[in-house]
Each structure stands twice: as structure tokens, then as C-alpha cells.
Length: 81
Length: 274
Image 1 (spheres, one colour):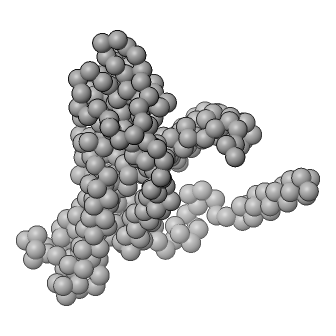
Image 2: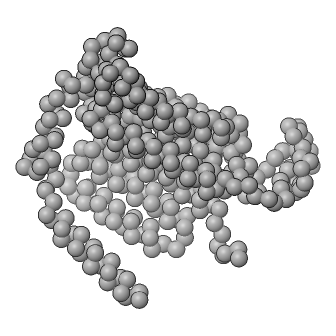
């Protein structure tokens, strides 16, 4: 694969990872984590680990993002007590 | 304190980076993994198990124990979510209903709720009007996702995929149904009891396959023992054994994913979802 493209994906992974922990909104944090997983899946695919890429795409980018969003939906801006 | 924390993180990160340099290069033919393990798997997988996809045979056959306990870990995750979230909450139940002819939304308390009424439509507390286009589109897509999930499970021997991925896809199709329609509609077609039962059944299928090998007089999870059961030679029996195990994994993962979603999206009440 073209190494420039690989480098861009790798940089995006790092940006997503840092953004996911620095962003203050939990929902955007969950979505950034999904984007991070998806980009990581591309990297696995580039490195030839297609099975791992598939798992990352389904579990990491798919279901765990849904779980995070579902959990975030039950949080409130301010504590209730 | 904040500076100290940041310094610790930086130090750990730098140490990690420094020692990553000591790792063998990616795809290095002289690394221990490439000199001992990989050549064995690459050369012997086909004659040992008759499975073209080496990853599948390593996952389900050579490291069958590992995958069995991975499935158990997933079951444990589902159980943990269930035990943490699904607690009896003694609260006055209230529900929201919309009176269809007038369009008025009512908040009802007590235990006299209109059931299966044509006039009153049940609504969720954080109700988002389920969009007609979205629900119809998801209805159309879901069968295809499920067929693809079955394909991924059944074709794991030849292409990337297998029990875990197929199971997650299958679970995702039900989760998509729950999101696009409502949690109650999903629970009606795939109840919590079914989810709990199937998640245990999946692990049971896996461990049962291993125990069956014991009964036929071989080592636990040595599928060649199942040759008389499948009626073919010992090598093909391993291939079929892997398929059995993959089906077990897929069943368990499907059920656990749906179960976790039910509990997470409704905060354990399984009454109102997203």
C-alpha cells in the first residue's frame, strides 16, 4: 500500500485517540472512539491481519460504540445528588 | 499533583517507546515467532485440519482452550451487566401515552395501564419520534445483515470471519431493530429469557464438543475423535469440529451482545429504551 496514505491513517488514529480523551462531551468522546476503532481496523487490514480487522470493525467500531452511546444516554449534565 | 501525574505518564510513555524498539521488526523472518510457530502453522494446517484459513484453525483448534475461555469471558461480561444493572427498583411506575385521536400526551401512574389499545400509543420518556424512513430502511437491511452474519460464520473456514464476527453481526442486527423501532418491539421478538438461555447454550455447545471428544476417548477438544460421529476421516472431522465450535461461539456472542444492549439502553429496567 501507498505509505503516504498509511501515514495519514496512523496520524488520524493518534488524533482520534487524543481527541477522545480530551473532548469534554461524553457523546462525542464515544463517537471519536468509534472513529478511532474504524481507522485502526484500516491499519490492521493494511498489515494483512484481515481477521483482526474484521473483529475490530464489528466489535470495536460497531457494537462497542452503540454500547457507549447507550450508556451516555443515561447520564446527566449535572449530578442528581 | 497534576504535574507529577503528567510526568509519570510521560516517563511511562517514553519507557514504553524505548522498549518497543527492542521488539522484532514487523514481518521479521528471524523473530522467534516466525522461526518456530508460523512456519509450523503454515505448513501443517492443511494436512492437520483441512481448513484453508490458518487463522480459523489456530483460533478454534490449536488454541481451542483459549477461545473457549474467551467465550466464557464474553458470557461473564453479559452476566456482569445483568447483575449490576437489573435490580428491582421500588418506584411508582409511570408511563407516557399518546391519545391518538386528539394527539394529547398523558402521563399515567399506578398499575392500570391501557394494554393493546388502539387509541393509546405507548411512548418512551426520552422519546424520539421513530422516523418512518429510518424504520423501513432498517427493516429492509436487517435480513441482509443476518444472512451475511450466517455466511461469515459458515464461511469462516475459507475467508476472514468466524464465530465472533458473525455473532456480533447477528447481535447488531437485533440491536439495529431495537434502535430503529423500539426496545419493546425487539424484546417481544427476542426476549431476555431467550438471550440468557442462548448465551449459556453457546458456551455449552463449545464445552460440550470438547467433552464429546473425551467420551470418544481422546483429549479434550481434539476433534479428530469425532470422526465416527461425522462419518468421515480424522482430518475432516477436525474441520467439522471447528465448525461446531464456531457455531457455539456465534450463538453465545449473539445472545450476549443483545443482552448487554437491552440492559445498557434501558438502565436495567428493560421497559423503555433509546
